[in-house]
Length: 172
Length: 172
Image 1 (cartoon, rainbow over the protein chains, first blue to last red):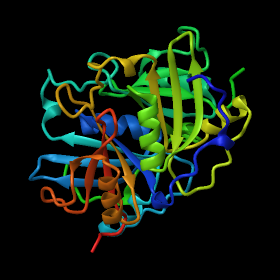
Image 2: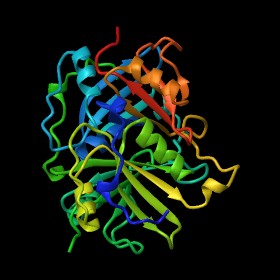
Image 3: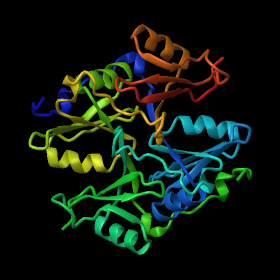
Image 4: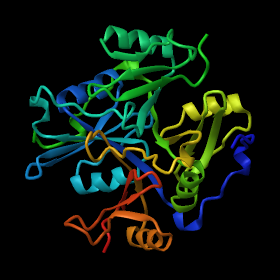
């Protein structure tokens, strides 16, 4: 499979899939406070919903990161419907109590058994972004200067999930 | 952590994160042909880019699923820049040859060691969508009629990754 890619020669989606949207990606988190601080304060995600299931012992956090204005409804039901019409949502699942277990760790998918790889955040200025991540004490998996691909970096969230950092235009 | 959620009382993203976007989620796939057929023909994703790395022995596929018109550039460099400005992209990584190993399997993240949970597709009519998935022979992890949550389903992609199916408005 190495033919030249042509976007105009691609599939027309089946009519039965009209209105389908890639709504969200879910990963489990150990420590809700740590993950919310990271995704909100370091990466700039907005928390657009949270759903508590005290009997099930878990909480779901929904976050979005986009320049688009977000008109998040106040009413919980309306917010749920609104959220389901969005794309590019990140869902974090916190099973209560894992944050108190020193040995508890999630699997990032990049060592055996492999599967999930990473999330990716696009930034306008990757050098400035990476310098800020350094100042914020973010863990790096790959700095811009590491390896041969000098235009991407990989940082890690508090659970160790890999987050690719890219920039639309090549940096100078 | 069970306080009432109020979207208007949420964080204002730091100015340094202006322009940041949640660009994509990457998962590894065993069989590119099977996964492309599933994501394009069953779910309606559009293939918006592919990048072949013959020396590295892998290919990256980028797909989007949204009603928004997609003006995908023909030029590879322009397409790469365009793609980096999007949100809600799904990246599939195919390491060449895994499709020929009968015992090869990816880890879906929902058994030990846990981490990644699922992708989620929102559909306008979840009953019609699930009936069509049945006709298409899609594997179900949870049918609408299973368990107590009758308004969501979980299907599985060719690698076994879980895909939640939701509908913005409650179905009748």
